[in-house]
Length: 368
Ligand SMILES: [Zn+2]
Figure (cartoon, protein in one colour):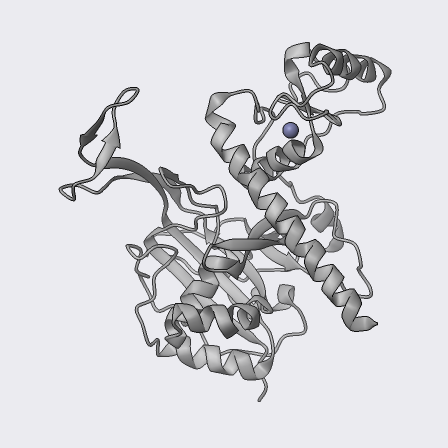
């Protein structure tokens, strides 16, 4: 029998799925497993070394289409974590002085979360991965090495499904503890890819930068992820909502100003003039004006609600905001705490774009 879908159960007291916003001193977790994290887990199951992963496996595994069902979202928690204690580590103290000591880092975890992950791909690959997950070569962990799974990651035999939605609804909601009651609905995060029938991503698609391209240095490319809410029935079965319910799914709102509004246009121009037509972050010529809050959007903006930005800084800020799933209050690029994060994201975009340009040029030559 040819099976195109592998199921994983990621259930643990602690898991942590660092995304691109996860930097050294503050390491956050996303709300659900990332593709890079799941690929890491598959590599551990296969017993693939880092160099083997970079040469062959990253590309093969990135081809898999991933769907995640959030059976239990868990709660977020920080641990107390130090680096370098008693290891002759010098840390900054004041302006120039350093002293010997440990560096305190913050790491965030999802506690008591449970995810069903479905991976779809070529039957031969699915069979190989299924065997590896059932009998892993190396220790499996959920995002970080300190997060072992609480139950076998191998959920059930791989199966054949026409699409991701039917695969992810084929397994009933599963309780973690004896007293757990089924929720009325659960959320799914489904990887979206263009098809001849659907060439454009839905308007509510999210962009996740979590498909690993290289390991040294770590770099990622983007993929589209669509969030869907699925009703859970009396016997814990998970149903596919009808089309109307799909569109009514409450998506975390992507706030937008009414850009056509005359009053808004005026305030935008005023802010641009106040910033002398320069990006507030890098002082390049500004091309756009960014909202730092949408509390007064649509023509009611204060000057303080807006910032002039160049295209690169705007893209960097927007990507960070998507990654963090921010609400009405957004990133203020003039605030010091964002400085390093925006600088790093800008560098990442420049690198990604130059890689893409090079790749496109190479592809054109091959066609000729
Ligand atoms: Zn700029």
